[in-house]
Length: 203
Image (cartoon, rainbow, N blue to C red):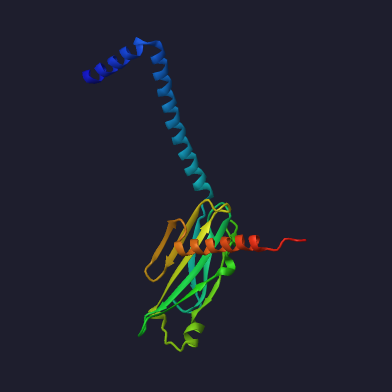
């Protein structure tokens, strides 16, 4: 306690030696304190804004007959209070009978699709046809699925990746966009840029 008081006494004595130095030191202290408070307030506002606009989605599977049957539909429901913008939807199905074989469906039709609050999107899937085309045996007991949905707010400021792996009972969400999806959107923007650059000018 005496050590702290001694330090404060020495600081106060130093400030009193010169009024200009005192004013400068006080100004620097107040400015630094103001900067710290402003930074904390900005972070708090950013977190609050993020919480207000971030997408909140629910992913569920609905199989046609029995559980894990290779046909049916899945549901993407917007549980938030703001519209949800779909950026990427992909479904993976694998069969563990004999040699493992897997198929992946990319639902590019629903890219940039908007789901209003409280509404759902229910795309169909039919991997049974894929197994039959390749003459592969299958059984619902040996089928596993993985659904990945990349969604954001309308301004694309907050991007989240939702995953549902029903066989393992895993449902999680990660911040950001997976690298393959990021590259796909980069390719889209690059092609748009080339189109605008190479587009013939009207005469």
